[in-house]
Length: 232
Image 1: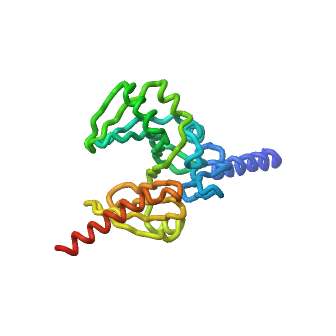
Image 2: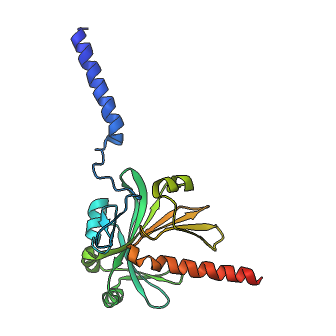
Image 3: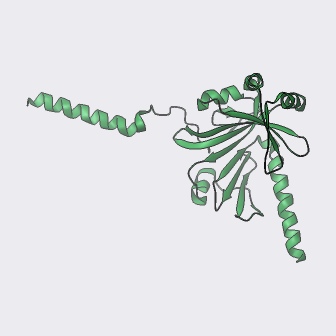
């Protein structure tokens, strides 16, 4: 075989191998990585993560980034408080597979009207009710702002890895559950990482100004547990 042909074939093989290494699975490299530890706090105090700015980005923005429409449902708790969520199951974003739950900012009157128009009602073990919304209401919610994000990675993440990416949390609070859940709390990032010894880690992202919504209930439960223990 001609030496020039051999060299040409060798060059082609090397190029193919390089592409295979740089582009796993034949996919283009991520030029805008959206990773769970890349949290930016803007001058307005709003948190941006996964390319979404809490309180500003819409459900439609998230659908474009995740390339999926998700599943939107309305929930009602026993106190007749409404909240609406869109669930994206096992999405691959920047090389990490995870599920996303986006809580939408919808005023109570609008949510109540959607509840009354709901096409199916399901009672949950928690005591909450889950309502399947009409197609028109789901379409209307595409412009609803994202209030907060719950992120559940498929892979289990250990404490060493989390500390390396996020640093030491300001607080570590143990939740009084059978499985032993510890919350790593980063108020300045608006982040709560729930570490579960027998389950998946759960990340909650809120705007830092809203962090008391996460922190206070945990502190109160922790204090109540300590008081109960001291009395025994």
